[in-house]
Every structure is written in C-alpha cells, then in structure tokens.
Image 1 (tube, one colour):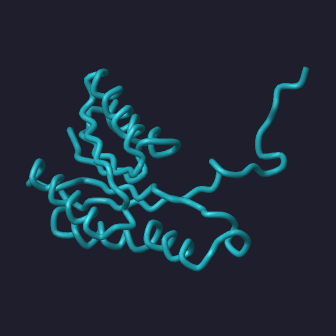
Image 2: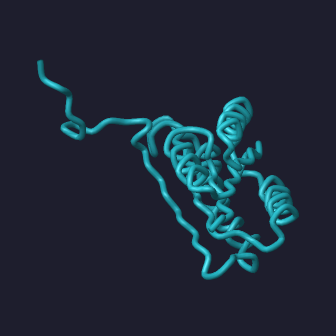
Length: 153
C-alpha cells in the first residue's frame, strides 16, 4: 500500500533516516526542511533511486510556510495523508545558558506550535485513522557517558 507521509526536518539526521525508510517501502514522502541545499540534495538522491520523495523548503516556525506546504500536499494528494512525523527540533544553546528569550520563543514555534498547526491543517484529511508522531532528540548534539561502545584494541 502506498501511503503519503510527511516528515518535518526530513533532510538530515533521524528525519532523513525516517524519510529513507518510508520511501524505500514505496510510500510517498514529503519532507519539510529549512535547509535548502540539503533538502534538494536528499530529494534528488532518493528520486534517483526511484523513490517518491518531494522536498519542500521552508521554516516550520512560520505559519504561512505551514499553510502553503499543506496546500501543496493536499493539491497533489487530495485523498489525504496517512501520517505526519514531527521530527524537526533544534536547540539554541542550553535552556538557561546561551538561549535568549527570542531564541526560546523560536524553539517553541518549531517544537510546539508547528506540530499543532500541522495537526490542525491536516485533521480533516487523514486516511483511515491517520497518525501523528512527535519525536525529539538531542542525540545529534550531545553525548552521554557510557551510552556508546568503542571497540577496544
């Protein structure tokens, strides 16, 4: 079954792996990412493999970007979507160290307001039960003692 999947932050890291997994299964995957060059690169690489990956460049902290993105997806898939994976996440310094008030508000727009708005935009357009998956990880930015193993010589 070919599903329609949305992955925010789908051009890098965990989001890219999620995109690759669903695309390799034959699903249509829309990635929404603000990193233009990487978004185009990933979409092109995956399309070259014969996978149906559509890159959309935009900052999910911007409401109009989300509205325009939803409009594009629904114009191309009027039957709706199966799943939204809210993967986009960022940290601008520490929570109390190195993060200014404006930075904190921006982080909230990316991590809280954008998933809310995407749910609102697609709520009447889910196929079947539909799924919304919210994930977040700081693993790309930090390490934890004894959380990985190195091969001993």
